[in-house]
Amino acid sequence: MEIVYTRNSKELARSLAKDLALSAFPANTRRFANGEISVSLPKSFCDAAVVSSTVANDDWIELLLLLDALRDAKNIILCMPYMGYSRQDTQSQNESLGARLFARLLEATNVARCIVLDNHCEPMMRIPYAHLSANEIFETDVVRKYALEQIVVVSPDIGGAYRASALSRSLKCGFAVCNKARDVFGELKKTEAVGEVSNKICILVDDIVDSGATLCHAAEALLSAGAKGIAAYAVHGVLSDGSRERLEKSRIEEIVLTDSISGPDISSPKFRKLSVASLLAEAIRCTI
Image 1 (tube, rainbow, N blue to C red):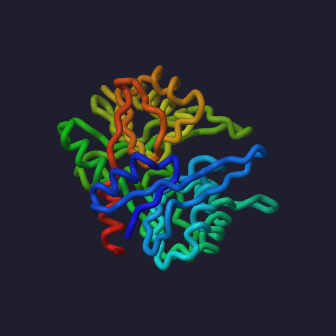
Image 2: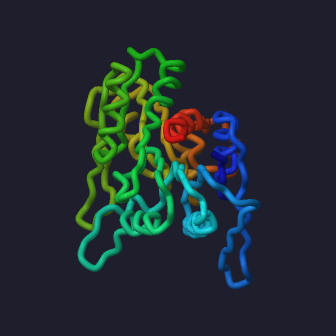
Image 3: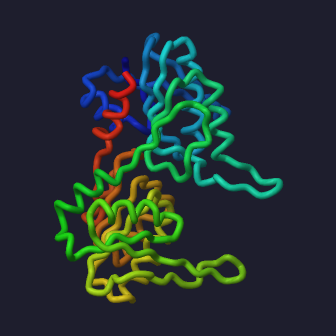
């Protein structure tokens, strides 16, 4: 087994290679004048673990072309910590269903098994897959930093309540949720804290930080309800334009992300990263 990785997953792939004692090779990607992408490999592979998070559209194209370049491989494990378009998991009439579409595209390749991490929805693929959670990594970090009698785990919205409640059960601490009220036009009007948070350090837990608005609104609601401190733990730091500045100005004291998505270094004491390499390496090890 050897590791092959796309441009946006270099650091994580190298950490995995070190943990698994495997060789790691980058995919060679070039772009034509019209914007098309071409992918080639430095050699042939028989068994490969492909490491790639698909944050932007080009990431998906690069991954699919890489998998096509590996079409003669006998066994491919796809390690995709962040699966882009998984937030498009519901549809109405005449609306696309991105989560299902990209799952079908993966099914057209020769991927034998897929590993995802805290996917926004249950993967809509017929390929065998392992759906991992970063809660164990978050739990270890929270226990190291906080006295458990002083904290309450909080979901910033109703949709993520299952993730936060699972962490609160593991930590044997309190649990709360923030309820977002919207106006008739669907705009966010108010966020309210539901649960006992007064005089507690609130640990916000979410899967994705994109604009950062949900975390910021939740933090304000918790502080208004008497919380004495806020920290945020999120698996995937998408961090769209303007989000880092918004989070920097927020009253959240610390934002902890994982390295599921490679990105520019955030030179701020407010941000910190935890590695998920050991978690993903164990999942890969179980399939080798």
